[in-house]
Amino acid sequence: MTLEQTLPICIAGTWRLGAGERYASCYPATGEPVAWLNAASLDDVEAAVQGAHQAYVHSGWAQRKPHERAAVLYRIAELIRQRAEELAQLQRQDNGKPINETRALVASAAGTFQFFAAACETLEETITPSRGDFLSMSVYEPMGVVAAITPWNSPIASEAQKVAPALAGGNAVVIKPAEITPLLALQLAQICEDAGLPKGLISVLPGKGSLLGDALTRHPLVKRVSFTGGTRTGKHIAHIAADKMMPVSLELGGKSPTIVLDDADLDHAVAGVLYGIFSSSGEACIAGSRLFVARALYEPFMTRLSAAAAQLRLGDPADERTQMGPLISAAHRESVERYVALGLAEGGRLRLGGERPSGGVFDQGYFYPPTILEGLGNHQQVCQEEIFGPVLVALPFDSEEQLIEQANDSLYALAAGIWSRDYKRAWALGRKLQAGTVWINTYKQFSISTPFGGWRDSGLGREKGRLGILQYMEQKSLYWGMNQQPLAWAGVEAGQ
Ligand code: NAD
Image (cartoon, rainbow, N blue to C red; front, side, top):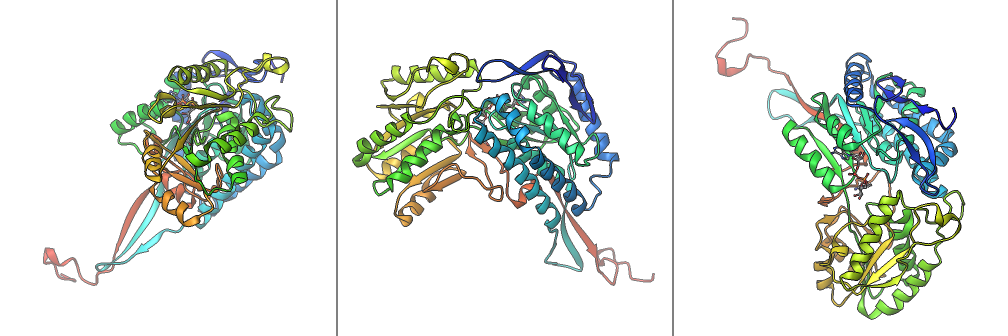
């Protein structure tokens, strides 16, 4: 297939051109097109959902035994691994992340399918303690058509986290990937079909979220939405879900505090803080974007941190040594720049970065360097709003009381990090921080076996974990009568 040819999209088992506008997925390191495709149209949304419903009702997938569904999920994991390098290279081009990072995302996607295959075949339904002449059970049923709406920052890993448990639970899935990064979701759909998933159970609808994601969420046959993306979009989806009485999970934004206590191991803290904010060029919901440092340590710590940040290798995502690639788009880089200008206007100072790099590859792509702002208060806008770029705001603190108050003073509550040699102190602090995930002496580490999600404006519900599969199933209680006699109330005697 040549670059100029238009890629087909997957609509309920049929690969055909979308009926929407033609557009290109572009490589953020050069701005050049990687592939052309047609967006889906509203009619395509209808066809995908109707097709998914038909496949759900007629393919027998929902009725397969858990170990039989698991066998397909294991094959999906295997095929992702077989095609890992090709997928990682495509992902690098689709969203501009450094190759080592896209390899990790592909490996994570394979691990997710493997994990939910195992969770599926070992999921236990329970016999509950009986409180009468009956046997009572709690069982789980598939829901039907599930919508998976994903952002641009970690394609294939985000999609796998939704598609794997949804399929494991016996459902059909319609994926709405971010408009600008559609390629990996399409590959995943192809892999699912190659692995033997009945046709129609998976569809991919590239294009505008405000049109397609909205229509998908409102569709009466869509029984659940799993959304990852911005808080504003998440709230919009929550309103639609409320009207439909539809369960929804929302993985949203963050403004996570990273805390360096005065007894921290500084080597570990410097490495962890750097990784927490600058890996993925800060385009991560869990980025540790607010740094709190004990005042006594502030100057020496910031000197070390800034020196190490200045050494980070920003550049060509195809280069194995690159640590930070470009930002996703020109518009997003401008938004990051506006936040840095705002921080300065609010009275902040630049400790590092703050200016576009230039020359060579930097003149083509949307690069932005590691940037550190200081001299600001936690209440200021750059400390409260998600920048989603490589911008760290550093704040000294004087007491733990003040620290806890400020760290928790945010609409977001997704993650937090603590650096301290004293595990009891870190434990006590960790329990007081309001966040879905708290890392102690580490940061941005993930396990598919551990639940993940946010409090407050950072989201609703949890993904991952063995029981993550249950989010895509409806619970049902079954009672089996064991009475020797008719129910006493009616006064009917046996044999009469
Ligand atoms: P976004 O909210 O703009 O878009 C996310 C997805 O929603 C895209 O597929 C988009 O097309 C779709 N969408 C947009 N408008 C919609 C609507 N009205 N109805 C239905 N769907 C719609 O977010 P983004 O810019 O793609 O991603 C960045 C955001 O995602 C950041 O805020 C980041 O923190 C968040 N994020 C959160 C997590 C997490 O797990 N908590 C992980 C990654 C990213």
